[in-house]
Length: 518
Picture: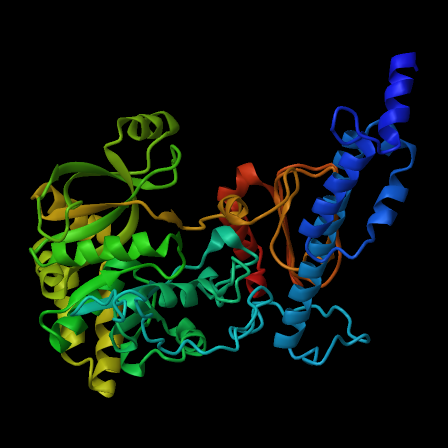
């Protein structure tokens, strides 16, 4: 150490002042006192902080302070993460009845959840929510004192709940499709989240679900406030045109002025205010005798979705964003999808439709008369249970199996009868494990885990998704972008790049006689 440095250290370290300025140690003492006061929950005496510094504090207080602060923050972060994991596990145990509210059960052990193939009422990935889905009054505006309401008069929310979800096998099964699953680990299944999302626009009395006979009881269990008269059961799958058309035919008789909004049971949406605003605009537009769809702003050049080309603005009062649909586009290749994205004139087709029930039936009559006639005959006797059963048995099997886009939306768009509301909310149809991985939170460079984090151990693993549903430990070393779904009766291992092809495995299982796992 040079003489000037030595002199400076001796003078400043003793706490003396030079030219009226405090020495380094005194400055550091003041800084540490201030920091200690600002740290919430800190009970460490200041003398201990200084003693811990040792010679490092004397040599370079700034470096010592910076490294100590980082270490403290890391320790607090780790403690918070562990506390959060413990709390989540305790809540799961409470809900499952394996832990009392008074404290943890030290004798409890991990138990293997039942296979979704064994029962439609229990899912290993759906934590039952003890809170019933009862109607909650709208919140109060603090400035006006009036209730904040998004309710649209005459609006009926219709939820088609169908599909086998084969791309999410073995998590999703024929008897327990993905809309019954809690894929967000929020304690609410996808169909329950859909109910919650639509409730502000309507009332429980104007919420309707169309599902298959095999899933009707599961819908009743998960939506206890759904009125029995508003659960329409299909004898067999017939694509979206028959499901939505059946709801429209029944509604047209119950309420001739009803506005029907169709929203899939198994989609995920973020940004509820933007969603409610878009649906409200769509309902206003539908009153002009237009079939209205909601176009999602594309976030990337997706090849798995259809697209909607925007036309001119319709200048409808109360629906400033409403545009005419210029054209529906089928799922494009990557190059075409990139061109759509860069043009700014295209939106994803999410299959959401808002329309007057009677007008939709007119479109069916014009563009798909065979389906129209069959649905009309069924709806005529719907309120008579015996007659309904006979009509469904006689007529339903012969109805055309066609999507609503092909049946009415595309031909109606060619005649200028379809509008679109460009929306800004987030949307995902959770079509495969790769898209599911995108919506699950994770640490950078780590695999996503759906389920109990403590049942997964990884080292040098990046990307991918792991579903530990069998009750046994899943350990991964040095593998990236894998999809591992471990259930009690089936194990799936593939890559995210091949996630869209999982349905092929389902087909092979069926051909190989493994129907019990489907």
